[in-house]
Image (cartoon, rainbow, N blue to C red):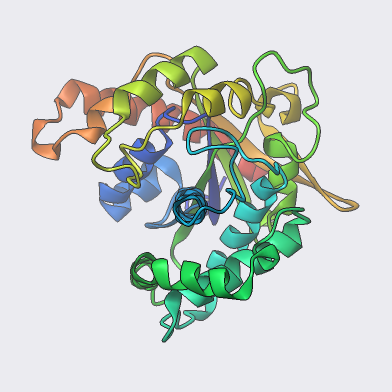
Length: 326
């Protein structure tokens, strides 16, 4: 491989609490020259669907507070009522990517209303059966007003994430998918990575490679409890996924079912077209990432060396696959 080549788009996938967000944080704080030489990455621009899961739960909380049935989740600590919303989240990521490219101005006089319109549009694209348009007009307006502050803050944070250009950058997109514990493969749509990856835009897929942070479902559940901070439920690094969700949505995943026999490519089908994405595993079964949730000044050199070495090993395999694909 020509060492000047870099990974344009990196899909960072794993079960919850596997270490994805810690890997993101680590990559973002490294010098650009080192990220390029060791991992074939440019400085990263990062997207994540967690903020939208949090907002859907916020909407449900606002509905419940007004005596209305929750729309999206069976309860505050339970899974989606309509699993087609896994696709809703991906279509929101597609729109986030498009906004990055054109540096769209997201500031609105009614940010809550604009956010609800975004969500409704993504729900339609995903084919979700549960949508916001079932709500009475007055209730819809109350929801928009209740979400104004968070929606405005989200828009500002997303605009701050815009680079001057994506040229010379690596787009990093993080999300987790899975299915019920003990499920047979293949997972049925809309569960798992097979369906959600197929919802990504062609512009993302044709540039993408995949880094999978590998832990067992048991490790994922344990680390999910360890990272929980009840005072910061919307945090990327410290949020906790409810136990029933861990067992029913993330009790297993279908990564192994999508990866080639030699482990170098992941197959993603979108319509009639198949994409073969360069693939690598970052083995985090022996925990190499949790220390990153602490203050950087307290990071031990041995911990930094461990994560860096394992990442370097994973990206070396991905670079080989990337060379073949190009």
